[in-house]
Amino acid sequence: MILKKTVAVSLIGTQLDFVGKRVDRWARWRPNVSLCSQPDLVIDELHLLHDNHSTRLANNVAVDIESVSPESTVTLHNLNFSNPWDFEEVYAKLFDWCQAQAFDTDNCEYLFHITTGTHVVQICSFLLTESRHFPGRLVQTSPDNSNKNKSVGQVQIIDLDLSKYDQLATRFDSEHLEGKAFLKGGIQTKNEAFNQLITQVEKVAIRAKDPMLLTGPTGAGKSQLATRIFQLKKKRAMLAGRLVSVNCATLKGENAMAALFGHTKGAFTGAQQARDGYLRTANQGVLFLDEIGELGLEEQAMLLHAIENKSFHPVGSDQPVTSDFQLIAGTNRDLFKEVCKGRFREDLLARINLWTYRLPALRDRKEDIPANIDYEIDLYAQKMGERVRFNKEAKTLFERFALSERALWSGNFRDLSSAITRLCTLADSSRIAVSDVQEEIQRLEQNWYAGEQVSGDKNLDRYLSKAQLAELDTFDINQLNYVLTICVRHSSMAAAGRELFNVSRTKKSQVNDSTRLQKYLAKFGLSWRQIHS
Image (cartoon, rainbow, N blue to C red; front, top):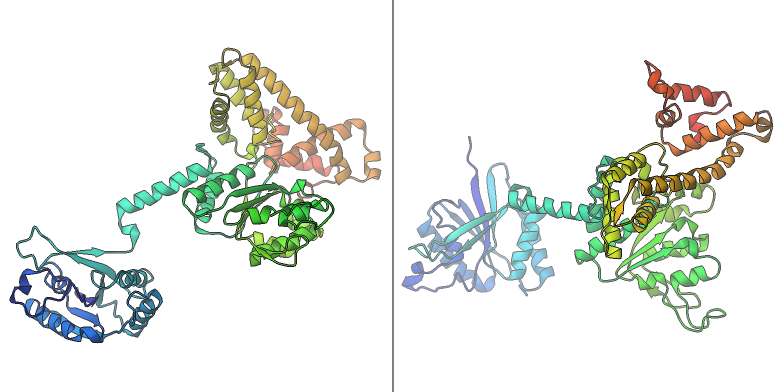
């Protein structure tokens, strides 16, 4: 085994290293002499950087090092800083010096001594080591009053690979867990796909200012997640501004442009006062544009310009104004399809599609429903100042229903929140009884299935022509209508088949839900791909 040489780089300490020719200099601690005096650290080579004014001091220190550590070879390097407190100059000259060296990492271990020099020099040394322009570790010396030989002092080597520090790694992991828990509202979610999504959102939220796009069905929690992203960045002191939330569906007609980008006084009829607009109000903060697909094409073009240039023209003004905000957009539409239909700008989608996250529907996260029920109960208590609880039988009944195929949760978390609010409000003696749950289940099913019947009638018109419909019996129309409603609701043919054949499938030795459903659809010239295209 070949032992590597230890090579150190240091700057002369014009104050700490200086003692003149005094005979008592060996009783005083001097950082560069101390570095080469350590019994457990042999410095084979020391490259000592100095300027023109410190040449004599550097030579004296080199002589003293040779007397205490003959095995250490000291090489002096003249490196002049016209202003050692000028960050740009110091970094540039240290960078150039490192670039000029032929580092041999196969045979040498490198240390950068950060005890001497100005604070600017120390910071630059750290940055060069962290970026691996200096391929080594940091070393720091300090006095040791407990040691009889005070001139030796003590030494500490600092490795900037933080993964090697278990305690730090544990603290960083804990911080990430806290961030993820915060984004989830403290809810102990179990859905693996959702947890992975939140893990990445947490990283992006604290590392980037680029636009984010949150997609998913209405009520999936896009607004809540956007708010928590803002709050997380605010906790980390990454923002100075506020959160401005806008539902783009409310921005229609002439007022849309003025509401977003502001306007001058007298810009149009009724503009009696100037207005900043949402983009300017969100300066140094977060702008959440929910249902961004509802914006008109003209507003989309100005929004793109504002994102890319951080400036825009208010309505009625020839002078641009600036606003530096992070955009979070939300939509329940497929914006790629909207681009194909000419209703959304392709260049804007390309700009906001860097970090896109699709929030799953509640029915796709059923394992998280029990935790969200508890969360909604606690939320009601915080709002109303009254603690309401389920009876054991009532909670079992409600959770069984909530997890079943009967529960459509078409409004997602809004449906769940409304259900818990009604249960808590109607509960006698702050206890939710079985009768309360039964009544709420009936109410939910009436709402869901009434809505599905209305939308279901449109399913046949979408997939079959008028001539085909004219050939069908009323029985077939109603049955096919129901089947298509179930199919639209599920992401896979197997899941839809399980709901449709929930009884007969249990009597078969070999389950073939997908095949049965495929054959049924084929009778009407339909396919699963056609339904979900």
